[in-house]
Length: 81
Length: 223
Image (cartoon, rainbow over all chains, first blue to last red; front, side):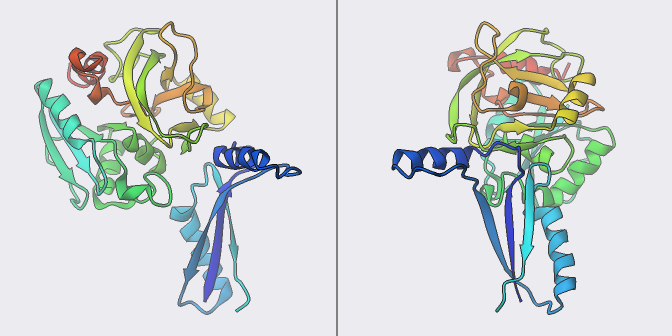
């Protein structure tokens, strides 16, 4: 089963990369962009077939390693195959 | 004094750190990350700078699960003295031995230069040979050195005299190169046996190379 984990800085924590990209977009005359936040996507292929169990395991992975919960939030998605 | 310097894949400051402590007359052992124990009689553990595990995922995110880190965490929890420099500071944050987290520098650049630091608290082993308000000239070299902590955590740091060093100019005014909260460059834990800083005192031990201000910092652990 495929699981997609998105990790991004928490709201309120300044994202310097997002800010730099926002600035670059403005320089390229892409106006009308209010905000840019950059995160990372981690794509897991796991053997578990039960979605609830998978969510439990992946949540543990996020808490222990994939995200630093001091500054980052994460979401876990199960894309339709 | 026996100093154990931990070495991870991608660590690149272990020889400088060894050189610095040996120059100060101490015995230094390099300890590989796969070791599960620290050398018996270790007085100080140093987690040196570098790019452990290629900084993959986040700086120091993977290093914290190394076998040697289990021993370091146990050593620290038993009151052993631990110093984390640069990537080592990031390891201490990731391992929750120190509060807060590191973000990319505010200007998104890797910064490598001499940086004046202002001494904030000297009521600890590390900076006891320094004076409050003193300016130290020490190199910084990092891309992810923007220290973050929430307001409640920051209050606690100040209340317990855990803020050790801030970035400043040579006159002592705030000069924040990387966007750290309150320009914080170094902190310690509440028990004052775990110390972390982004600047490199081991690179400031000979005046011919620009500064020897690191000597009195490292000597805090010795005398």
